[in-house]
Length: 370
Image (cartoon, rainbow, N blue to C red; front, top):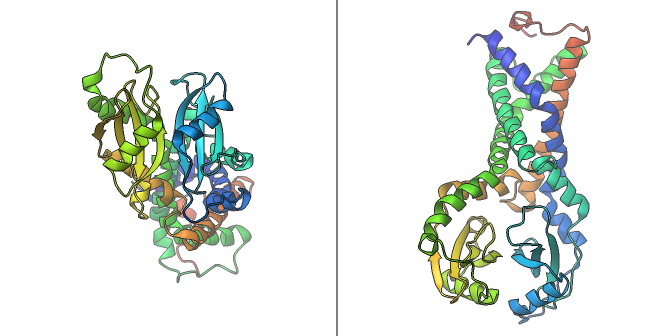
């Protein structure tokens, strides 16, 4: 491809995705610090030395009393705020996502805790799927691919001209548009790798629902094949039994969530308990344990598929959640740089089409930038 074609590809791939990416950068900034914000807003859990959480059956009964007529679907352990457990109820076990009622309880006292911050939840939903469910999520994934195209094409277009300048050398005596072009190129180079990492991990995150649907028809279907055709267990053993069996099967692990029999992540004959490790790396990888709902016996311990591992490892990397607060601060700084890069790109295009002298093609770029 000629430089002219690369320039066309860079310009239009950037223009199509810029407004979406600006929205993602703006909403992503508070989400980088979501854990710290929730710690500050949520009441502290009183965990006296030697204190033990209430039995799971007791917590389920407390939650069920607050949700008469609804059925329990999931139990979720909140590791961002230890000591919190969430109970997900709905009209039916297989109800689509988004219609459930969630109660958050203190695992030690059973007291109901405040819900997650509504503003943070709104920002997360906007960042994840534009409040449009799977179609919105897939649209954002496509925008992430366009971002990768714009970054690669931008390197091809501007690398020959930037080689003639020292690093961070700017055109102080040019007009405003040329100065902004310099800032756009400089900050784009500085944030290039970060933008690629965040963009591509974001693309992978947008595929979460299709990937778990594939896992359901792939690995889960293989594990429960001997039970195919059997009716759903009407009177399963208590969920606490399934949790204890899973903990014995994977000693040293801790539960992430438990799916009741008949839900999306389980089968009609099984509990599915998803366990996580305790190291920074293994804590991000969920390993499913299937427990027979009728007998409470261990059915299978499954090694997670590679695509699920890739998805789970990409989530904390997307928000800089691997290295504690220092890495989050670096992520936030790059996020602000990305906002400037995107905003300056919009300005450069508007300035060019507003009648100001601009780049009409590669031939209009100066052969030597003093």
